[in-house]
Image 1 (cartoon, rainbow, N blue to C red):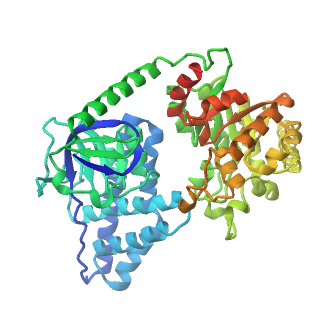
Image 2: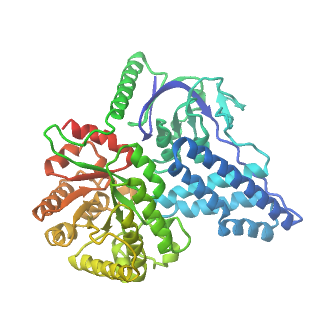
Image 3: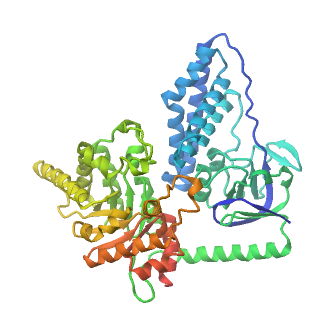
Length: 559
């Protein structure tokens, strides 16, 4: 038995035969061309074909996994259609008189290097995306077919006993895929019935490939590095997507133990399915509201499918991040109304825009900051640019006539900020009354508690609002003075720190002293090792990713 340790990015245990996919040959010859215009036309035709392929892939993913999971490929299409990307390719063709394949590869490398050098992990993940879409264009230019057939059979370079054999079909057998790396488009095209799990030498937990693996329910491990061995093809392996462990040719004891754990996990999943519709209540009768976090209206389907009782955090900034210009009041109103109507009577808590720090938008024209996490962001932008803020507040108020909407203010550090925000809200209400536009006059207002200042001022803040929601991600980084975007600080940024837990306790106690409810919408809300602690502290609400709702309900009902 050979044991390999990687990084688990999608939980679950898979047991099966290994199929190794060799890295595709993306070598491109540089050629001098005589007619740059003809070569640019050739590039445009290939790009249009790649866009059409991505449209088909997007539709396939949407049909199987839902609209929200297919949006990645909308982003890929937009990337290919981006004028800067196309302009750089065509400029290189015209200036250097090079073939389109070479121009696409060169521009892809430049864009990928630019994204990879950014501090934001979100932007770093785009390096793999631009390489993926560019490879698709190069494949069209070179007359290559997709690496995965539409019927789900693996068609790429498969290595069998050390020999590369192209176009190996699965013949009905399922395999664990080993590869140097996998592009999101490759992963999305795998037939779930024929792929048991994924192991890659490269990659990260934040990559779109990892996210797709979780969506597809495939156990996945990345980062095995030099332990990747093409001769593993055909061998039996066990992978544990939770721990990141890979066992090639497992001994009998390891195989038996993993089979037992796999059976337990499947039984547990069956149990969780039975929890739909059950109240989120402890054995002693303590009731907790269990909500879900979303980023866009299409996420509501997952909220309802996982039986969340409401939406505890709608990250409205994604309506800004995914556009190239300001979202109008009408655009925002339509989005908020859609979510409110689909959720019916269930609460929908919408956070006002939280732009800045690691979420940058070009058209905001924000100045460069050496320390953006402590800079001009969220409520600070809203209060200093009220013309932007009021557009959003008007849209939120109008949508409140169609459902149970509440407004939540991010990055609050003082009572004055809340009062200033409420003043602008009252101005928006007054305008709508003058226009005879319906809205909920008693719409609830809450604040996110995500700074030590807001914890210290919690008693005063509670007198101004209807609820608190603790953003544990930022609260952890600001309490421990650890930038959560810096990988080297991960060992110091312990969200289980007694200091962070004490901050949470102080916030809950202050809320209850003033008769308002307090929830958690950060990642700690889904940390099952802390659920009992939060219940003992008297938490009123937990808002987590839709897929975390039922596992969390199970723990609460057994408390």
